Image 1: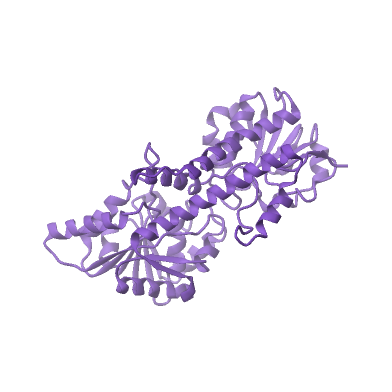
Image 2 (image 1 turned 30 degrees about the vertical axis):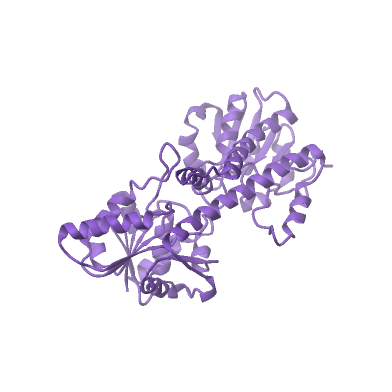
Length: 443
């Protein structure tokens, strides 16, 4: 089987590497020549644990290649995955401006029967739009070529893309064609997906499932974050509260870790998009709007907390640990760190930052604050001569840092743990502040 993947972000690259098998040849295409050149030379345009080795292994077999020749790739393929980005417009509604030219190109160049698989996150009704664009193109070409359009949304998470793609909890297939469903299942045979993990439905429902998942996770995160704020005022412990809540099987333990607010490229964008999609159908999605507002409030509360504990921040040095919205990724889109760092600088603080995989993106995001920021090579540099350290992202290496060494380099001993990484056992010697945990000086 010959497969084409159009759009080489992290999703397209990961799936291209995984699906290339003894019976499957994959050609990944993108119009960005720089991206193609990097991949051809064995480099990646993004960071994802283990992905570079996976790509290299797939390329070495000869079953995976990269190209900017989208026309040739389309003509040779039986299944075409579309994994291009779908940004939001100024009104937060999903914008198909990058997808439509790709679909037009598919209609212009297919020569044999093909199944078009929409893997990008798109609003309900997109598969119908895709079908109409291809039909129109074929009519203009005066040819009749059978084709199917399938919705197959992606649920893999940054930082664990390979695992999530290799062992998916579910594979959603939205199609009105039983033949197309079976063909896509044949593709997923490479991953040995069990029958019980398939969710077979119509295209509109498949498109809606992805938004429903991300929006619900956003609501759950905002809820536990607001519970953490309440626990601080009520002298309760959010760790115990979340543990108790999570033991109720109706709620479940996932996504009950309080933090400084959710971020990334999916939850914020998809939550806002679903609010706008609901408006189109005459619905006011109040609970989701509340979660979005609560998330922004949570980000603002972090610097308020630091000020409440430390007082005036003018001239003080703050060490920042972690910038990306979650560990094992460089992605800083909508990350709480952006709000926190900018507000600290605005309050007159000097900031020393260390993030295992985030400094490069930070340099352009914090361009206006660059004179007040120092980028450090490790945790200890970030803590040197600082009055406080603020842990924003729970990278694994932070769990093993030497607390005594950090204390020895600091000017004061405030430790703000905005991920509760040490909530159950705060390190000795610090004035420790978690989220939703009673503040205390640890002897």
